[in-house]
Length: 326
Image (tube, rainbow, N blue to C red; front, side):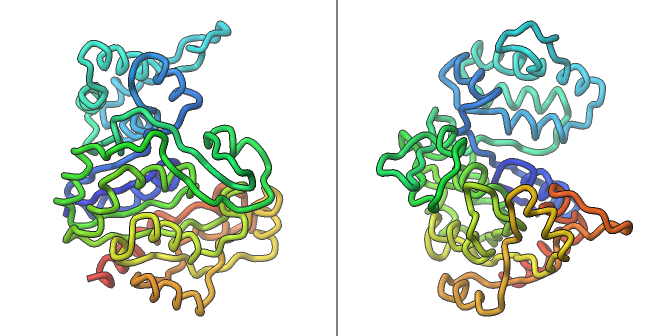
């Protein structure tokens, strides 16, 4: 089975780990719009989009341990923009500048680290994400989400509009299944599926398209959302008929766990049976399963684990959802 997994962040990593035993081939499609941290450095080096997520995935899933240790070496802090930047970034960008192709440089890193995943940038064109929320003017997402907002995000656009990486379109067309991994909706998920051509392709392919709902809200992103709102926002972005099935967590949280989540200003993405009507209206099949990480035996919990999918349960949930979507 050939699976394409789209997204960024911890949700993408958890999804890859969960479904890796199910797929003979995995293509990972990551967002390339970030302009902070290592991505800011990459964008200053040449006419390249953000590639930090792609570099992270290749390093995490590379199987050559000795090469991996080399690529993870960092320069000691000297108060420069290069402090704590892994050697993999400089090595990859040097080859990108020499060859003129960031995709070729990423492929070279895959070969060095023996990474079996095919990792692709959603688009190879430089762009930003613009957000319009409680103001009249749109602004770059890196600035917008650094402030507290009193209303929901109204629009999210790519500036300038960009076309999808042709290799991504080809991977989607040949995939048996496409998984939209959970994550921060406006930072990780939507920027990955917004490049021109991705929505149209998802609406036309033969492979099943599964949207995995996140577990908790993200401050400044989805504060008042329910799980169905999360799925609906993605479904409306790619267009009716693109998403076949949604996997939604149906396991609740204890009072103690809710208190832990509130301490970091987040809450569960709730699901209620009546929400299925929204999915029905969107033409999306509902699959519910307890996919959140199980409560620790000692009763303790931390916010990160409460917002993470359990690897085994996510794997089983994906199997159920893809079967249900046929």
